[in-house]
Amino acid sequence: MAVSAGHARQRSQFTRYRSWNTRMYPFWRNGDVRFRNCWRGGNVTFELKNDAPTLTGAKATFSINLNFPSNQTVLSDGTVVWPRTALWTQYQAGQPVYADSQGTGVFPDGTPFRAQRRPQRYVYVWKTWGRFWQVADGPSSSLSIGTENIPMGSYNMELVIYHQRGKQNFIPLGYASSVFTITDQVPFTIAMSQVNDLNAADQNFIQNRAVAFSVNLHDPSQYLSASDLTFTWDFGDETGTLISKERTVTHTYLSVGGFRPQVILMASIPTCGAPTAVLVPFKVSVMLFYLFIIPLPEQPAEAEAEVPLVITKRQAPELTADCTVYRYGSLATSVQVVQGIESVEIVQVSNVVSLATELAQNAVDVTVSCQGSLPSEVCTVVSDADCLTPVQTVCSAAVPTPDCQLVLRQFFNETGVFCLNVSLTNDVSLAVTSARVNVNLATTGSPAGRRPQCWV
Image 1: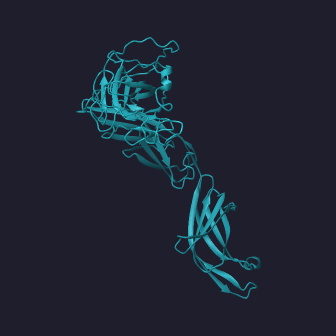
Image 2: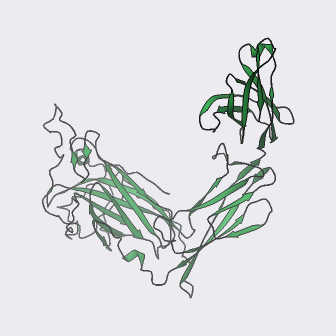
Image 3: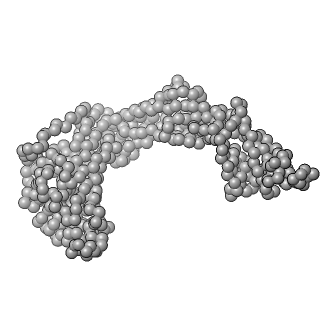
């Protein structure tokens, strides 16, 4: 997704069109000193984003947010006010930075605003492909344009922002621009996950455990919502090809090593009866006009050199006889499959008869057996009989035998039934087991007088 931010003094190649009313909408060049004082109380910056890459035929959407000086606040209706009274200014708390404009106003080409409930104090003039779109809106706005019949490639959306200061007076706040891309390849990403994966971002997965592959389409305009999607998977381990209609599939790697799974997506897009996206404006609660006008040639500023936009374009395939467009996308990734702790089991709980331990507390030894790679840490959690309320938690470095066995010494000073939860971890895996243990402190002839009687 392409994102760019524009600031009030960003350099721009924006040129006005012939019918532009320069008396009402003055056209200042980049670097004009008047930009320094175009907003009372500080500088206004712009955050301009787009949702590219855009599949050809879909709509590309651009959004703009105006960021006002930190000593000002934007109300819910878009009015910018002083938040508190400052001794060094003549402004009161809640007073608008600029008085509300009377009347609806007109666009640079003379077209009047349409009456709206929401105040329209800002005018945004968007330009790309030699066309202009005029929007009257609040301090946040967006524009969606169709891309049908537009060659593939990268383009630049330019924007100039004005603030209304009376019915016949609009002050430029600055320029912004955003590069966006149109492609005939369906854009998507692959997300991979596995149960008990300790680090989901490292692309390491456990052998003999299913890995979930999920395709996430980048389709913000819902252009593919009625499409028929087919996914062809090759998981890179010579197990063959999987063809699926589902966006999520699972695969289990039976051997360790590095693999390169890849997927090919085919989208069958029905287009019969669909309107031409370029000529139909999107529905919004603001006033919008688009103009197909040849820009007025202007000499660039002396310090500004014309930088040609390098665009690689190709024509999309024609429609088929059944009015279906086929679009494809492909993506490959890499995974590392390692051996993990495959299982863990409590195999024995036995009493500890030792004068040293019985003098303070009563102890039992818990023998744990595991399969797979060796653990590096072990944690024991003792809870109530219902396994709901933890009583004691102990974690320590694990020192297993070569055949993956550990003996854990656990101390009890009360009788009853306890829930014993044991977890083994290493850098890549986690294994958990639990059991209920009945502890009965019975009196004996030993020097301490009591010893635990335990069973699972």
